[in-house]
Amino acid sequence: MRELLLAAALLALALVQTMLLPRPQGFSLDLLLLLVVMQALIASAPRAGRWALYGGVALDLCSGTLLGTHALALLVAVLAAALPLYRMSRDNWLLPILGTLFGAVGYYASYGLISMLLDGWVDLHTYVSVTALPKVAIMLVPALPCFLLWRAWLSRRRGEVPVDVY
Image (cartoon, rainbow, N blue to C red; front, side):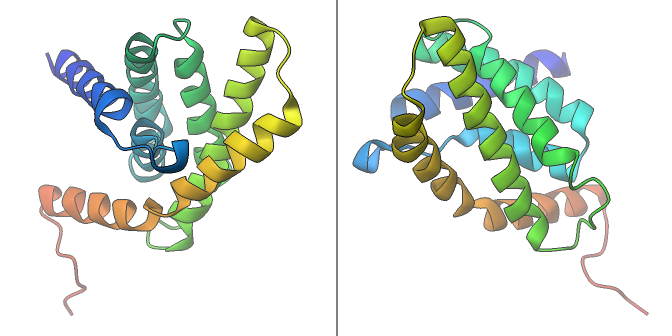
């Protein structure tokens, strides 16, 4: 039952991302990518992998791309964000910024590669300079606030005290 609720929530988020979010200058915030990377950094990579699979399929259904392209790219983003930063403390404020940077670079690199393999030739210079780099920069802006809010919400949900009491 929980998995169905999770899949429905990620489908709703994919609908919001593809249809309701504003696109200033043609760029939008990839909410599912941010959510999956934060889940990989806070909880665990296997749980974030499930979220990436469900969210990627939902994003493929909502955006009209081939089924599985966003799911594979989100799975690469989970691995790119979680593996290099595995031993870093969850209290370090560089963790969400580096995790989002690694995850977004992995996501856009793998999505570009998958698009190139499936659709044919993609101009690499144009893709990197027009699509990937600006979107990676946009993803870095909400990384730290989202990470801190999510971490505080999870610690409050677990009943942890946010300050050390001696």
